[in-house]
Length: 120
Image (cartoon, rainbow, N blue to C red; front, side):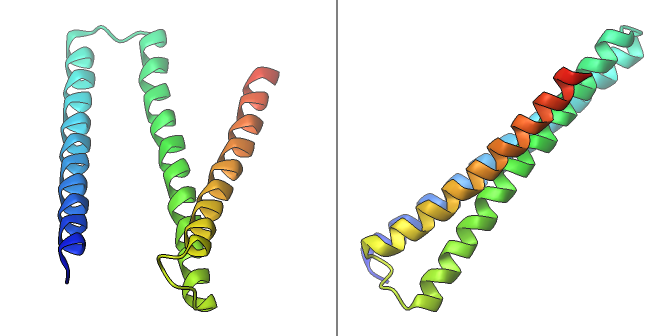
């Protein structure tokens, strides 16, 4: 491995560890807040709806990142199948186009969901 690969690997590991730690802390504090609200009796219909909204947003966020990573993976498989050089602009273009396709599918899905909610 040359120096750039080592630096890139350290950045990826550090980022993954940081984001995982933040996600765990956020989940724990959200759980504790909900539990305290329920124990204190501060839960009415409006607050229950707000608590459900948070889980719905989490679902859509997971869907977004799942689509982006899925299509980016397909882009990487196309690069391997097409035998492109990894540092060529064609390889970058394939991955960026695939990730953009994931974003566009998420956008269409969310637009339909918002229209369904508006029609109710």
